[in-house]
Length: 375
Image (cartoon, rainbow, N blue to C red; front, side, top):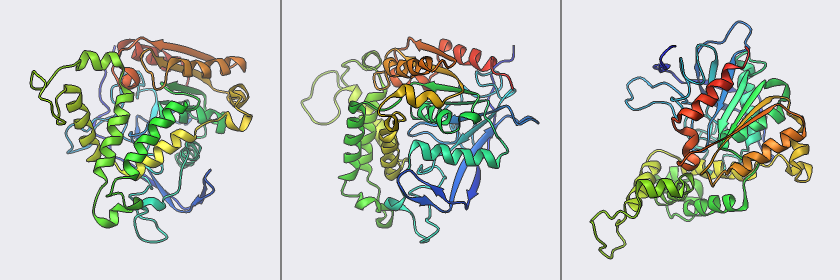
């Protein structure tokens, strides 16, 4: 058995599209670019392609490293590569940076071709369905008529699900991990509080902060702290931090006293140093808007009737933001439509972030699922 290996040094690629892309918001992108990476080789029949869809703060950089950048491993590097669950000896894997992101694809921090200035807050609202349409155009460009599989976690899982509904004939298999058919009111509420932290930052300047040479760091820092709390389970926080005090005693201060406070501030500071606030706003709204059952009177059974793929749905026991109950809603709707679906609930203490971690049971499950896919 081959020992799991990295795909090594990878180089991002860029595809430009001049064909107008109609958006669900009513707008149109007339000229846009998508940044992507590929791992493995596309076979002669173009039948072994797997699309990996990223979550809120993810990107096209799924696996491998970038030359001259220590610590630049892809966000799912533990999953993708020779001998890994998504084995690049068998599959041609594609990671695409979504429109509106801040990692190179057209978004708020890129130049609007019509004005020659950064888009800023003028970049149009985008949805999960818009991202899937753009990914389909990239697949066309690469000569891929049908994906062997589409996979994603969290917001990426929503994209994988949407692929099976928008392009049912172009997806053989879909893995929807730590995801949901729509956000709960509580989830939308968390997103709104995070957005308000950014929108009310004095350095936000209506989304055109680039022109002022500032970044709404305070708002972005708070948004990340709020989000990060929801990604972890109470058990994980208790095990890692408990009520540990940095000074060994209470000092009656609003400065950092508890270790969990220090951790959240660190995560917030780090995030505010590289992520774009406008992207955060756009992406959380895309999360809020996703609801394939909406056009079917809220009937998820009717919404998923279009799907033709074979499914793997995975949830994690302590994920309270995208709970196992939400994954089972997808499973029940697929079973109602007599679709081929496998479901697993992984016992994990790590909460929502479990889908990113190197859990032996989780990876064994994914490896077995990918092994059964014929290309």
